[in-house]
Length: 128
Figure 1 (cartoon, helix red, strand yellow):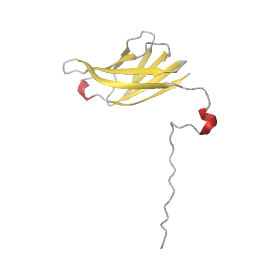
Figure 2: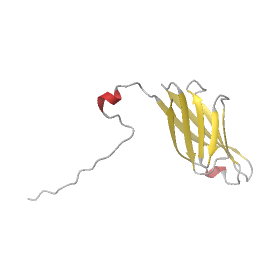
Figure 3: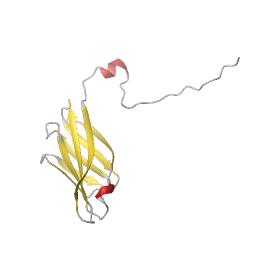
């Protein structure tokens, strides 16, 4: 009987702590962004998409980058303390962890594409 050699596979999971010592530090909390869908249609010239961010156990200033399937023309929130900017397909929001939670986010498309086709493709965040 012959044994079949199986090459070992190594995977990296960026979300996993590296052992007991890394996991024993201060908790970073969690943040999630959900793209709800179309908030408003502006005829054939785009519209506004609705997203919502919520977080827990985060203390500090949050910088949230949300990427979309189309070019973002403007970003707004329901909390005036949130700083917003946009470039290409990315919306960036910077805010204190004490901001309105959950945070309502409006994504504007003003360049003639259909708001019905807008999708969130991902998000990242950091805390300072």
